[in-house]
Length: 69
Image (cartoon, rainbow, N blue to C red; front, side, top):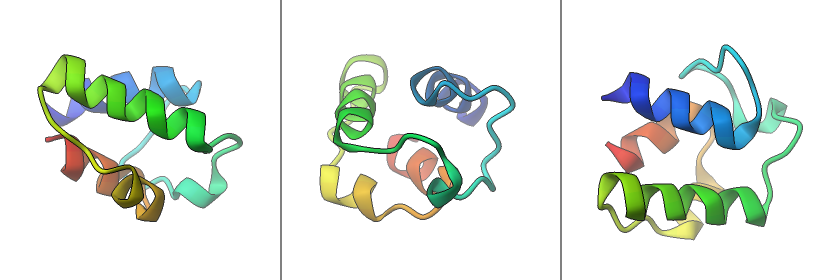
């Protein structure tokens, strides 16, 4: 399932070839709007409730995947 999540995150973050090891600090855009889009993705596609603070504290893409998986 992490490949599907990775693909969905790539679309939100507008980055091709997104890897789990990518650091969030290196992304061009990672702001409150992106966090809201990820929360919405989690709720609609994965039926998960994700805390925005935990998303804000994530250091890598793998950290976000763990929250969604």
